[in-house]
Length: 155
Image (tube, rainbow, N blue to C red):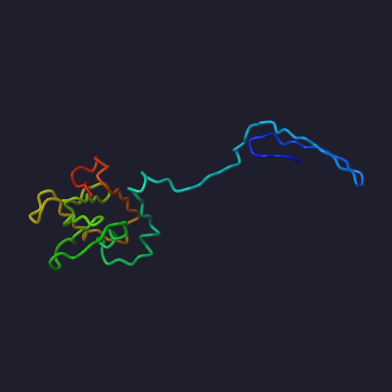
């Protein structure tokens, strides 16, 4: 039996007698490929490497003290406490200083957290009001490619 993907299977019966040699020339005939039994499963990316969904499992395995700590699950995002406690953490995205949210748009259930007229500065984003245990998923979009998030989506 001769077969190769993309060609028809060819079956030949050849009988040999002891010590006999035979030569058979085979020409494979192109055929159709049935891919109905092939199943490919993978997580669909949102858009290349610029976005990511952080699911419930990822949120549960990392202990957190506050919702601000959950932001550290975002690849390339780093938080630091700026000039003592009492205000939102300072956010760095890929080394870019986004202050307290000036260039990082943050929303909870579609409602923007960034305060455009805050006394500390445009875009102040404090997530301390969010209870971290109730978060099911975080969706992250990095880079200035997502214009639907406005001027806070720079980083």
